[in-house]
Length: 478
Ligand SMILES: Nc1ncnc2c1ncn2[C@@H]1O[C@H](COP(=O)(O)OP(=O)(O)OP(=O)(O)O)[C@@H](O)[C@H]1O
Ligand SMILES: [Mg+2]
Image (cartoon, rainbow, N blue to C red; front, side, top):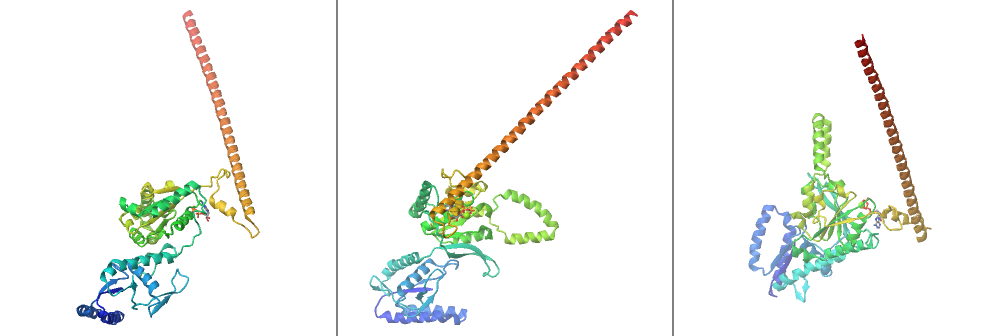
């Protein structure tokens, strides 16, 4: 808890200090009183003090509301006070903050200092304090954060610290990926377009407000493995100076947990779901059918049933609709200036609802290096690997030579493969042709045989007819 005091009357300053001191002492020792007594003491002291105490208290709680999220105002004021007041406070606390390279000194808890704003000592001038000074403190606090900030790479992991229920939390490391749009191999026009799109987005706060849309944008990056999807995300984060939240969907228990994770992300961030086609079963129908068949087996076999229970415990119950809501449901508007990025190797596997414009506003295909000189399917990852010096003696020319050799080898391989395929195709066609001819001949022979059989039959019939005729004549002659 942090308090700011204001009021008027020079003579009352000392009284104010005394009362403030009593309040700070009370705040320190109140934990030693039983909770019922604490309530009573606080109630009567406040009544008593309000008769003689000339100051107004503004309280900033560290965890307001349900205690889920740390107050941004508190954090900003804390930063402001720590930076501007450490030379005046007598009691300081020293800490080694995770992202910081040096020891950080800040005001100790319950330490009291007097700040000055525009030449005014801040016990007086209510208007100045509520209207200007507090805003000034918040803005300064935010600016200090931006200046001193090291960007973070977050990932969600199950935490055991929440006794009873395992809960997924964000944990982070400092984000230090060296990739930028300068180092990213991409067709220049495409690169320019993406950079413009990102920059326009980051400056479009007023535009989004005007059109009544949450300030967020979805990017879908798709293409074969090793074509720079993950690298582009790092370049995006470095360009905009955003934090990155790498969301592992399979570690999220259910839709509610997904929503909590979303609320717990900060603005100015990129939320990434890699290989979205593998993270979630988007073919619900088929799964249901398979489950039905499995169920029958499991009912009979207790071992299978146990295995299924274990599987359910570790499996994510996040559904497609949960994910759709995560992207553009009502909750997605909590927080602002956020980019959501999906990556996939197989665009066709994704549900159209998931990637429609509005959810994934920009679809970016990353593909093989298609430079005319290459004339072979080479991924940027292959190019990067071949350009990498393999020993200390290799200079730029040697590396380039390696690349050229590799491309030539790839081309040769592709040529041989094409030739082989061509040969196989020709052989197949030849075989088919032969077979067809054989069949034709067979048919011809068959026709011939049928014809000769018909002729034999015809001959036989005609001889029978003439025999009958002669017989008739003979009988008549007799
Ligand atoms: N367009 C590119 N420009 C520069 N380097 C690239 C590019 N594409 C790939 N690389 C290099 O290749 C390696 C692999 O790239 P990356 O991890 O970004 O591929 P990906 O598309 O995410 O692959 P996957 O689908 O397997 O995740 C990286 O180390 C990167 O240095
Ligand atoms: Mg990748």
